[in-house]
Length: 169
Image (cartoon, rainbow, N blue to C red):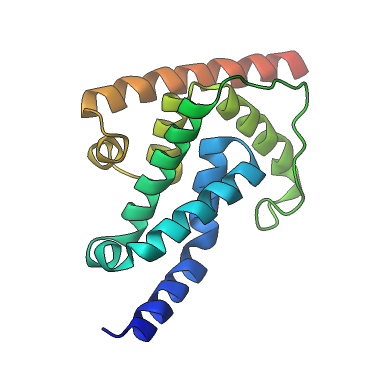
């Protein structure tokens, strides 16, 4: 395959996959700007490895890169800046119905409060719709770890969302 054809294939992949992987990156990072940076960094690295990625599954390859990039960032981070309110940028998702905006914001806040590993499991299992086996492969852990992290995360999310629901009732 010529370099020009590879470039065209890569450009078509990026165009088709951008929104899907940006959503994953947003949920992994909890921040749209950080997610865009993470995705752009990973796409640059993916371009260099495009022949290897396209021989396998480029979506899986990019998902793994996103997770590894986020883990590297978590490890480098020295401290966390806490704030009472996180601004939600306009246009985060393609025009969600107005009645779901509050629930979506509440879910995002609850996801951001999960530990990083639990958040990654929830995003990969329930947003990316990966199997337990595929999630374990992306995270580099056992299937049992995926199951236990998912169970703990879902329990924490249920508690957070129910507590919020009771507080507003």
